[in-house]
Amino acid sequence: MQISSLLAGKKVQTIDPDATIEVLCQALSVLKIGALVVSNNGKKIMGIVSERDIVQALAIHIHDIDKIYVRDIMTVNVMTCTKDSTIAELMALMTDKRIRHVPVVDVEGELLSIISIGDVVKSYVSEIDLERSALINYVNSAG
Image (tube, rainbow, N blue to C red; front, top):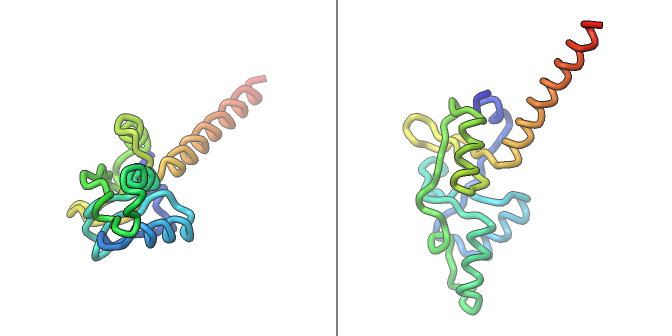
């Protein structure tokens, strides 16, 4: 199954690299999400910042919290996928790189959406449930 099947109705949220950690925390809390793509125009990916990045930054800079900006704590080397990537490929990438959010880009590398580990797991569970139902129907029809 391709990632494109998970994109319907998904809106990607971004944050400016010059936003403060306070603005970042408020955005994650209000939106009830775990990561934001860092972009100053909503298309070009400059980085990604997650709850994990905040915790790691606070452990080091707790006394200078008002001086921490998104640009200081974001991950710059962002792993991405395309809408034609498969869920299996994304599961492997997330497992190998130990990441929970992967931006989806077009052929020019512009931001289209974002997929979370929750999206991947939900899709995988649905797929397994369909297979289970098909097997039950097959077994029941053979009798």
